[in-house]
Image 1 (cartoon, rainbow, N blue to C red):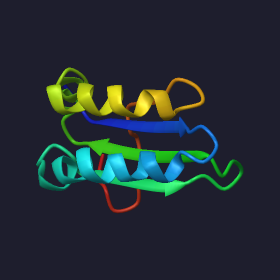
Image 2: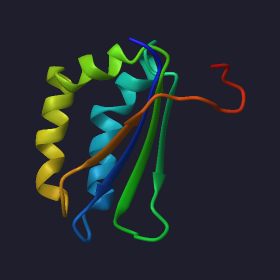
Image 3: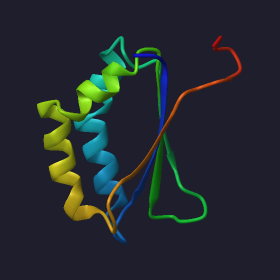
Image 4: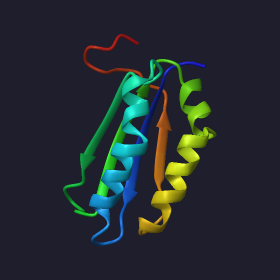
Length: 104
């Protein structure tokens, strides 16, 4: 599979964002930081909505993303954060065509 970008929006219940961030730090960040399949893993706080978390992911091999969607660690993470979210996670996937410093 080719390159893949994923933009994720998590909308947390009021007062639950810090807990979701803690779970992400414990369950996801160590895997992302050590995985060769993640070229970019970027987490930011929403500005327009203080209860949002935005994630940007770039994969030079998009199959890593699809494999992770079924991985035990990821399914356990999703199960833990779902009760803390106001609505289901929104994920937007695309084929990258340009990024400064990344040849496509």
